[in-house]
Image 1 (cartoon, rainbow, N blue to C red):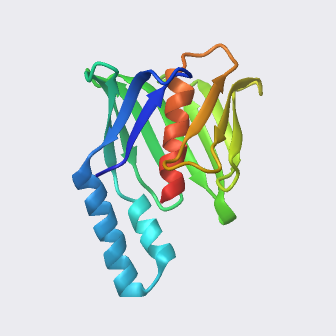
Image 2: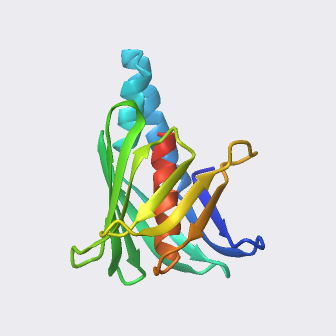
Length: 177
């Protein structure tokens, strides 16, 4: 119940997890269901679900909570802030949607300096995460056939792996809404 992401290394060792709250997901789904019933619109329901604010826990391999993601939802723009346990921000990701599945996601450091970005179409199974100068930081590939959504992320640039991994998780979450 609730969105949960397990992050593993190539040898399938657990690195960390991002765990959603079941109650938050149920509220978002109920809100979407009410909009769908009232309007008959799947699009309107998706907008309602996306507009729900949520919080996710970042949990290390030993089960210790090491931070959280706070999502401020919007119809076409969502903002995620990754913070440590004291509430100090690590990174903020803004995710903008456009017509026909287009997406642009931008991450900035707490002082506002650009960190990384990607853009493209959510229907594609491959995308690049780039630094502010256009250099590749990570290559992301979503498996075409898997029991659960499975992503391979190759870190190719000089960056803490937590950031591109988290970036890919946020994009995946927004893809399903």
